Image (cartoon, rainbow, N blue to C red; front, side, top):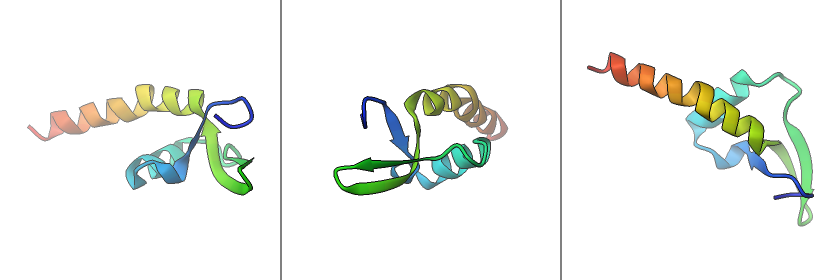
Amino acid sequence: MIKGQKVIQLSQLTIDQANDLRSWLPADSLQKLEFQGMELNDCVPFETYNYWFRTFHIQSLEYHTILDF
C-alpha cells in the first residue's frame, strides 16, 4: 500500500503477466509513485490488476489449456 492505495508494480510480476497486462492497459495508465525515497514508474491500482487477472488472464490460461489436449 502506497499513499493509502493498493498498487501493483508491473516489474514485480512475471514477465508474461507484465507484458500481457501492459498490452491490455491504455498507454497512459501506468502511475509514477514515490515510496521510501524511490520512484516507482510502473504501478497500477490493485483493482485494475485484479480485474484484468480475473477477466482476461485466467480466461487465456483456460483457453491455452484446452488447446493443449
